[in-house]
Amino acid sequence: MNLRQIEVFHAVMTNGTASRAAEVLRISQPAVSKAVQELERSTGLALFHRINGRLLATSEAQLFFREVEQSFTGLIHLRSAAARIRDFGSGEIRLASLSALSTNVVPKALFEFPKAPP
Image (cartoon, rainbow, N blue to C red; front, side, top):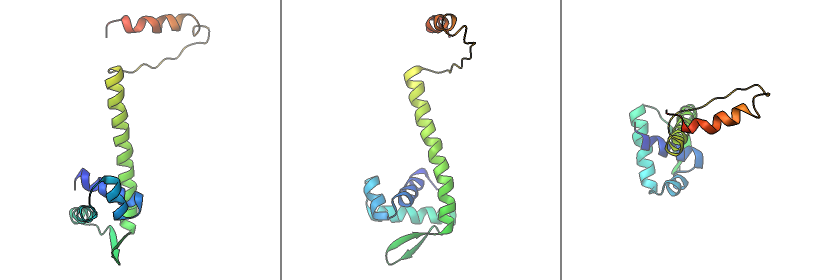
């Protein structure tokens, strides 16, 4: 099982057909079918029923898709983390303050913060 096969599976499940998944991924429909077959072979799961040239998701596919969705959420988080690190550097600041300090002391401290050594 590899990431490309998972991506193809996700596209088929999200778009409903192998043809539409192929369009979205900009690959051929036979390449989609081959990737799905390889995924089925490597996982040992029958993910789709093939009826009249159409792929119909099995209950195993539905369960597997839930896990794939969680992985894709993790990948989205990784992309945003990479962008944040690229744009702002590493680190994170969490700030809590009394309201009395929030108008005078905190803004001055935040202004001086980037000048301090890491």
